[in-house]
Amino acid sequence: MKQILSLSALITTAILISACSNSSKISDEQVFKALEKDPDRLLTVIEKAVQDARANDEKKQAQAIENEISLAIKNPLEPQITSAQIIRGPEDAPITIVEYSDFECPFCSRSKATLSALEDKYPGKIRLVFKHLPLSFHPNAMIAAKYYEAISLQSPTKAFEFHDRIFKNQSALKKGEAYLAQLSEELKVDMTKLNKVLHTSLIEEKIQADIAEANKFDFTGTPGFLVNGVPVKGAYPLQHFEMIITQLQDNGKLVL
Image (tube, rainbow, N blue to C red; front, side, top):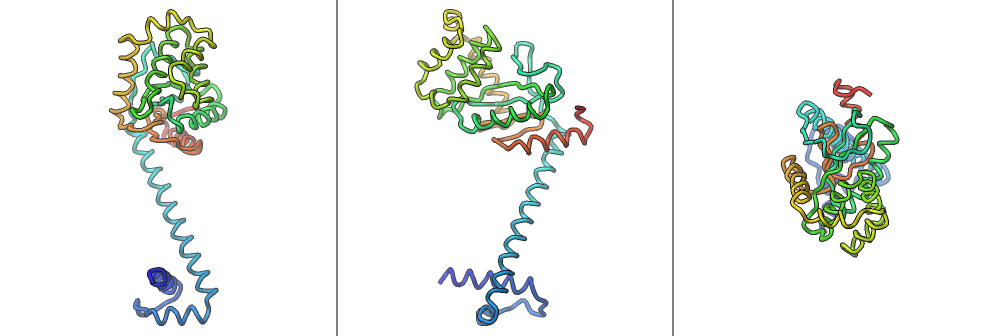
């Protein structure tokens, strides 16, 4: 019965939007008579009404995103990037993307491909800064972050390779620290030096600073990004990042 009433309401709406009428009151009897008389036409009208409504919603959503980006460009967030921070890409690149990530987050793994595509599209124009936001329900995220930071003290290149290998084979993280140690050895990391710093305040404070900054910027999940200070909350597709870069250019905030 509910389905019949819903169909009646939908058909009534279709009749109203497809014909002039002095009255907005149409009875169920009129609806069903119209359906019997020309069902194909009514169903076509209904389908078009649904498509138009969906297109209108998508247009409104796209406009809302553009407005949000425009506002963020005027009030960019300012992450702390110190000389101790290891950076992937040219240090003087005009586009800075800061990522707040969790090594065990599947969405972060997918975003790796998006960032690689951006680097290909804007060669030599992007620098990537990887920061940590290990989530409490990912049991191996924090220890993976510690290994990354400990390795970075020895070799930024090996830290980047560690990062890439984990996201390429993320399921191996289920093995916990045994896998992280094995991966570090495969990368020819000095394990004696690594173990000396792994659980020190130096590493812990670095990760906690990243977490505090992410929280300050209202990143509660992963991944989160800042594109020249414009926030991206979630694993958005390549086109979204391109939209931000284009708007930065249009607003005179970026020269490529």
